[in-house]
Every structure is written in C-alpha cells, then in structure tokens.
Image 1 (spheres, helix red, strand yellow):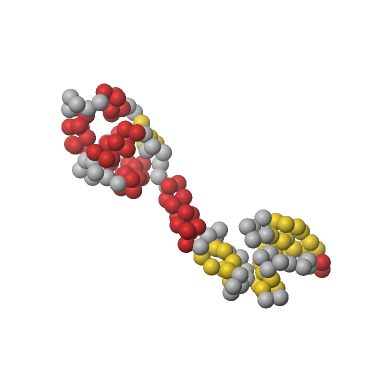
Image 2 (cartoon, one colour):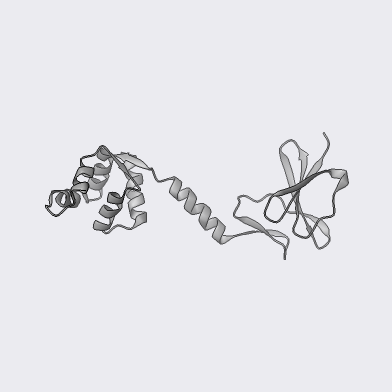
Length: 165
C-alpha cells in the first residue's frame, strides 16, 4: 500500500490528495492527514516551518490553535454540540397516558385537570386534552408548561420522564 496525504484547509475541507513522497508546500493553516495503515490517519500541521504531529481531535468542537500548534477546545462549539445531544434526547411524541402519568408523578395532574374543567379554558385545549398523543413542540403543551410555571428545560425533562412510563 502506498502512503498518501490529504490536505485540508482551515475549515476542514479537503484541498487535494498527494502521494506521500510528493508532500506539497503547505500554508500555515493547512492540515495534513497521512494514511499510515487502513483507516488509521496521523494528523500533522505545518508549524514554524516544519510538520508537527498533532494527532486527531476527539470531536468537532476542537480547533487547531496556530499560535501554539495544538488542539484547543472551542467552548461555543462544544456548547452547541452538547445542546444538540440534549435536544436529541427529548422525545418528539408521547402518549396522553404517558403524559398524564408524568404529570401525576410530579404533582401537576390535579392542576391541569382543574384547568381543563374551567369554563374559561379555550375549547381547543379541552379537545387536545382528550387526544391520544402529545407532541413536545405543540403550542398547547408549551402553554400548559407556562401555566405550571415550568421552564423549557423542566418541560423537556418532564417529557423525557413521560417517555419512560
């Protein structure tokens, strides 16, 4: 097997592939991945005029700090990744039974039932309450969370719990 290099720009997009023996001139922001064996890459950067082995980043929140020639964690990217993972853990849909059991567990069911029986409650909410499923992003769900004084995150956690019932 012949070794080769993949040259990336500072955004991580591949620029070119070269045979290892033909290592190109690199700008300071180019990153090189050298394929040593099948599916095993060593990552280098051109730092202070010479190639420096820096290994692979553990996730996409890491960037190369060209002032030190090392991987550094981008806090904003990490926060965005953490938020995406958290949002993916929230179910989109639960059954009405699951929702009601979760409300019962946390002491909110009596409040919601009293609200649904009140004459001033919008008819749309009353129809919703007789449904068979509950979507996390439904306007009425968010209105009910507000009525209960729950934050969006608390509502997410309630929904996650409901999905386990």
